[in-house]
Image (cartoon, rainbow, N blue to C red; front, side, top):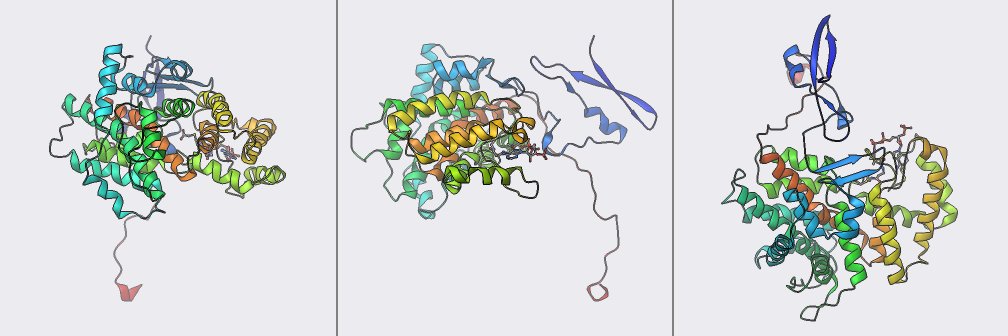
Length: 426
Ligand code: CMC
């Protein structure tokens, strides 16, 4: 029998239908409540499903993350970021022919127009990479606006291809701008992650030299970040996209949302925090600060809105971090020692255990990216690069079916209606 939820408003009993999920919690359908003259209240969406989706499933209590039903651990071990991107976009793993065709179309679309690159001239070398990535992604809307038709599946697929193909180039350009070096073109012979590393750290007109360990660790980082259901940035993409705006602009909005330290900016904030702590002797003082209710300081890289168990992405990241640290000879980096001790303390103390504050992916990705020689301000831009297939898949999923503009309501607590008072009478 279908479940129903009964609520009583002023003595009147109302039945609300329950929508059944294929995995995880069912959802009370409150859409009819407006007819009873009432809204629901849930700031921060703690108990609210904002949409239905077939893309990604998370069980935060068990530490499970599935993309289109496939466990993240299996994808990280056996797949590649472009294969995962195809899976997210199309719902099924590709055949080898489909994968080859997808990889080729991404590779062919990586280059940016010569005049478009001038967008970076407007920035100084100390501009934050996320500001540059956000602006350049929004700028792509200008190149993809005349033929805008979100109801056309070909337009949607082309938008997805353009975004997944161009985001490594844009991100690498933001890096090259920040170090005052000339841009490097993508190479047809390199994989997605290799191309990104080559465009960041290669020499113009020289044969690409990219470490396999680093490119495969980076590809894994991209896979682990590729989607995470209705997080703040994905919800932002959906919300902006629900106005039927240009999808490149919706993605730029998502990029802005990702930047904050409570979300994608945490990987950068983790490193800033480790640098600030600096030595093992100071760890206890910082842990006490994090526990102090009157101090806004939080241990960056710990806790998650959904995971109340180990973040499964962090488990994969932790082991791939070791391979990178070994290759880079960074095992004796003092920041690593601070990170390891901090993790141990946080996992033993009651405050963190009771609140289920486990290390999240950003805790380990920050350490890995640092060992790879990637500058700290670039970390969130790399998260953006990895998250691109997830964002564009969610946008595609939303606009492919009937949808409504996202328009939340509010609990108004301001002044009641009053008359305007002339300035000389106030
Ligand atoms: N350090 C110390 N205390 C914490 C932390 C932390 N990192 N995170 C949460 N708490 C405490 C919080 O003060 C609260 O305590 P109390 O119950 O006594 O009031 C309790 O734990 C519950 O926290 P919350 O703020 O209600 O949880 P939330 O779901 O609203 O926030 C979060 C989740 C990720 C924003 C938060 O844990 C946080 O700010 N963590 C640090 C930033 C971080 O690492 N963010 C990356 C998240 S993973 C990447 C991604 O998916 O975007």
